Amino acid sequence: MPASLQEVKRRIESTKKTGQITGAMQMVSTAKLSQIQKHAVSYQVYAQKIRSVITHLAKSHLLDSAATGESETSQDGKINTLGMLKQRPVKKTGVVVITSDRGLVGSYNSNVIKQTMSLVNSEERNKDNVVILAIGGTGADFFKKRGYEVGYEYRGVKDIPTFREVRPIVNAIVTMYSNGQYDELYVCYNHFVNTLTSAFRAEKMLPISAENMGSDDFNTPDENGLMADYETEPSQDAILEVVLPQYAESLVYGAILDAKTSEHASSSTAMKSATDNAKDLIASLELQYNRARQSAITTEITEITGAQAALE
Image 1 (cartoon, rainbow, N blue to C red):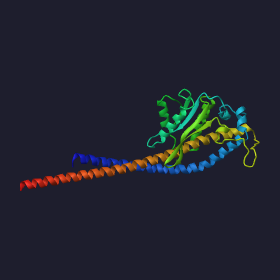
Image 2 (image 1 turned 30 degrees about the vertical axis):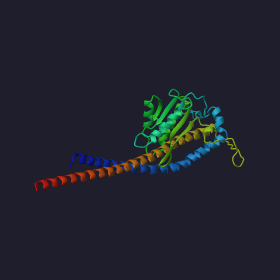
Image 3 (image 1 turned 90 degrees about the vertical axis):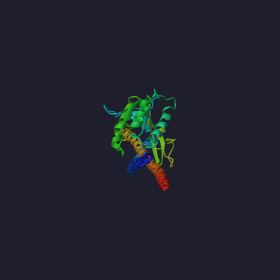
Image 4 (image 1 turned 120 degrees about the horizontal axis):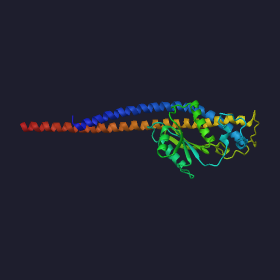
């Protein structure tokens, strides 16, 4: 067999093996996507409830009054939860960026990093007044190489992240805010829309206020013309000390869960595209191989016929 035919045959065999690998990776990503979507659906119920509670607290002005007061329940060694409500002049901005730890996820990482860079470079922000909090190795490595301050990084988020896994992340984020390492915090991630589409989101997490709760006006009466009012027991601060950490955890966990769902969808789509491309390449190489083989056979027949004619 001519050397060119052997080379084409080797390319066909190697491409088939690559297609088998990408096909297996597609099935794994699809299975993970199916599992995490079940978790996401059930979690949305809890997230909506805790957000509803915070919304009602904002309507009743408990958040505003707590933000101007001092915590009655703060204890030594505990994070000052009510510090999450404190508004202060913005000298430094914290940005939580959620990416994957690996590649082979299509445009997932590049999209969130590109949009995060747009946020970082807006409103007179620069490397001197921005702190990056990276969840995922890709984002951490990207910003480190470009000289940004990476104040916190967390690698190895599970494919199906648990609520317990998020708590130390939230504690680290709130502690840094309480210590004055930044004065406001945004959470940047890819929101899962469907298997083929994701949309970038940048949500303001800290400080917690009525303005960043996703509603235009919390001070207007409801549909029945009533204003929300609460009597708290044992105290206003004691209620907020319990509710605010749950809200922060729900926001971060929801973002990670949403981002992981988008990651698995992007990985599944990318692997499907790679598998389809491998099939197309194999078909093209097989056509090339058959044509070259046919040409070689035709040449051999011509040579044999010519030699026979010469002998006669």
